[in-house]
Length: 268
Length: 316
Image 1: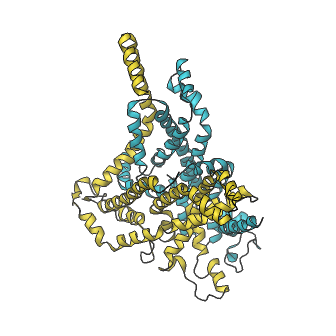
Image 2: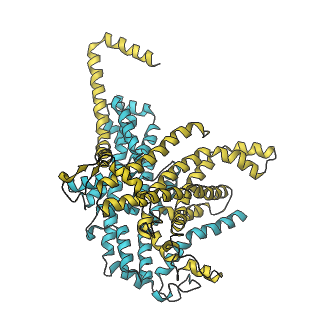
């Protein structure tokens, strides 16, 4: 009981910035810096603030839609590509497989920023610069996802696969009908993590997008804060809006996220 | 086992040549299937990561602004690397990166402490996991904006609290060269604890309960149990967190970009930020590539240490 109480106070310290953010987003501007802090707004302005953020001068809903589009497509493609590769690397026995896997694994060591400049030049050359497709492709080939799913495919007994082969099933059928359904929880875990990372990504959109109408929510947030420098209530309403989808995804998939991290899910 | 199998295959091949061709056809099909399954991944990685990393190593020896044509590119040998040594901002970046590594052990100590308490019998376990995890899943941009206001020199809640406690001239945090890096480190620790905490909880749960029961029988106190059982048993976890934490500390970008842009007076510049400025604001391809090579070498070195350390230092 004592430790619960101690922990509870620690957890408040972790949540306080979020509570401050939420409460500020519901205030009128004049009350933002009132001291002592008003945790529950005395003068309520919540609805007006959120209305101003979402449907005011900035097309916030558009940035939001861009983020949803990029994050969902990246997640779907990345999970598919990773699952296919993971199956190929674990359940198909072919000589080139093991050294190709080593090559893929070696790229995991490269810090993403070390290849940024040539990526940028390449993207300009290929016409992928300043497009959503380019941004989606950047997040679609994940060594981490392949590695994580491979561990799960390895766990499937080879007898299963061999029995299906004797029955005349090809690898594609085995992958689709037998292997994938078994590893579905692992795919979900990876997909949730990939969604969170893509939604939160700031660096790639900053470097690979120029057109305002293509901005994702993270870029828009920053633009919004410089434009609304003196309107902290609006900035906080925008921040709450930016975090909300993550919170929903996280609470729905809590167990998956925590398992994924515990498995050694390093950000990547 | 393998030789026996090979022998039987040989025997089998000698016996029946029609089966032999069938066998090699199956092998061929197997190879083709394998390549098909991995090709989307492999082609993607090759174009988006492998090719660019090779290009980085080549461009590091060139002088080129990529707004001009490729014919303007000039090979300069090691000039970029020599220039790095005289670049005050680069030196400052390395020092800041080194200082920033301090966040890793601090994060680990706090996370371990919290994990040990959560792993024992507390109420509201899942609430705590979510609460401590919130900063890790939230977007850095949104979080950074909140901290920017919390750290506001005159009106920010943090300084208002400090002033009401009788501190007349509290630091101006992210706009004070002496405190900016510490402020960023504090926020980074606050963000990273959730991740370490979850990994530690998983590590703690894999420790066999019998060890503690045996220690109980011997009448060991909790500090002794922590020192002799918990700490050694989670050393692989700690090592993993140390290495991944250090590598992650080299990649910090969002916090700097949103909060300080490397300032004031270069007090928060780091390798990745310096690289970004040179590459994308000054369009200095060669120089930025040289910084990228240095960054790569640091991460490479840490990875090598991890490989060696795994065998010597960690007990599984």
